[in-house]
Amino acid sequence: ISSKLPDTTPSIFSVMSRMANEYNAINLSQGFPNFETDKKLKKLVTKAMKKGYNQYPPSHGVQELREEIAKKIADLYDKEYDPETEITLTAGATQALYCAITAFIHPGDEVIVLKPAYDSYEPTIQINGGKPVLIQLKGENYKVDWNEVKEAITPRTKMIIINTPHNPTGTVLLEEDMKKLEEMLEGTDIILLSDEVYEHLIFDGIDHQSASKLPGLAERAIVCASFGKTFHNTGWKTGYCVAPEYLMKEIWKIHEVTVFSVNHPMQKAYSEYIKTPEHYLELSSFYQKKRDLFLNLIEQSRFKFSPSLGTYFQLLNYSDITQENDVTFAERLVKEHGLASIPVSVFNIDQKDHKQLRFCFAKTDETLEQAAEILCKL
Ligand code: PMP
Ligand code: GLN
Image (cartoon, rainbow, N blue to C red):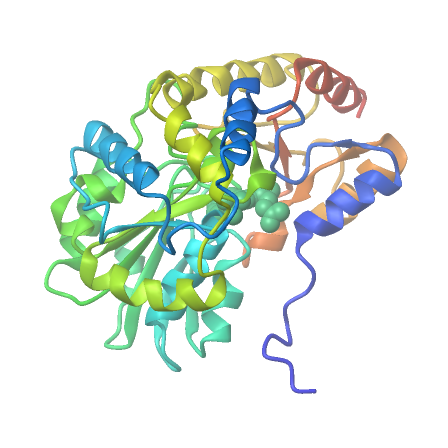
């Protein structure tokens, strides 16, 4: 056979979670909580099932949920989206990203991707014959060099993908970054794909800078979000994207032939649950406490770190412990010490010597304590 993705290997998330199970290790690798989603939300799903919401919902999502999403975005980011034409529920943010890229990328089109990057972007670009143009985030704090991004723009540049708060580094884009981007894109036809799945996990009083906040970005932006991250149920695989109608019309064509529509009872439940803003507004302080607990517990260890500013991931630098590469060290950590993490080089291109592993702190305090105990002994 002629593979469409000859260089793509099984996702590191599957690999590490499988290894964690095999070695009965504490799993801080793949990003998901090891505590339960809210009982109230589960009851709402059961209620929706009992009421008979068990057949196909409308293709672009349950109307009440689209309306609630529109309200939330208007409240938080001061931008109005039309729930009829500009909001679509998807099978997790992953499918929103897939639809957004597939709808617009033709063979030969260039897409600017900031590295390290979430692992679904590049294969999706390549499936469509596009060319990922990779730009490295800079330094230990993984900042964007906007001049380098500007220089990478060519007449073939169709799209730029950003991700804030950023997986795997925990860095965030600030208002000044978004303004620079807005200025750079002015007068171009470049589409902005903004992956904001961690919009409600941002720490130390920093405000999330959604692409929908700035008019010059919103007019060209597809913003992707994930209920799985926000409501502790990654396995329900429900997310959404918002975009101006001229873009959404094209996204629908891909959405209809990839899933047509996504789970009905969950959408009904989210429509109710999301009406209480505390359910997402309290998430940042909830996760900041977990980050702080984890970092306090490993303060005496030999790992070096800058606290994550968003997401539920923390990078730890192990260069004082070993000079092994991160894949070898991550494997040894699972096999010999019973702790799974993600080697960051898998998302990286030229920073393979940045001896860093990613740890997910969306875990019970008890799990974080057990993990920290292992890390402190290294
Ligand atoms: N983008 C980023 C940056 C992510 O970390 C994830 C989840 N790991 C996704 C997209 C996909 O989200 P979902 O689980 O809703 O498909
Ligand atoms: N987003 C999650 C992570 O970064 C995992 C998603 C997946 O398993 N594909 O760990």
